[in-house]
Amino acid sequence: MDYLKVDKEDAISFGDAKVDLSMFECCGFNIAMGNGGPEIKEAADYITNDVNEDGLYNAFKYLKLI
Image (tube, rainbow, N blue to C red; front, side, top):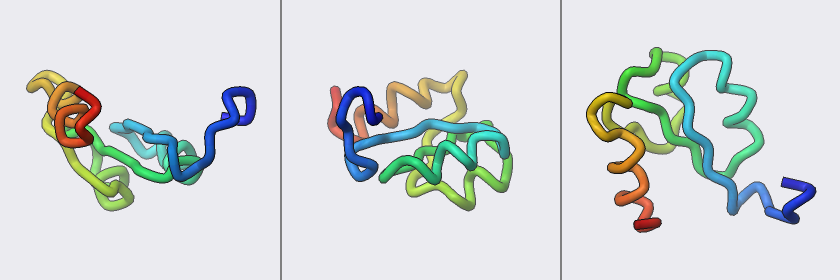
């Protein structure tokens, strides 16, 4: 983010495991995949569908990126 000069508030993260929680701390909006564990879902701003059920696509639509 430093290299691209992107502010935390403008960064979006996607995670599905407890190991992704540190990434969530660096981003302004955090999305948990539906197949993710309870820790990541609790920390998320939005929970999308399972990765095998078009979760990324649906999150991008929710965020109006596509």
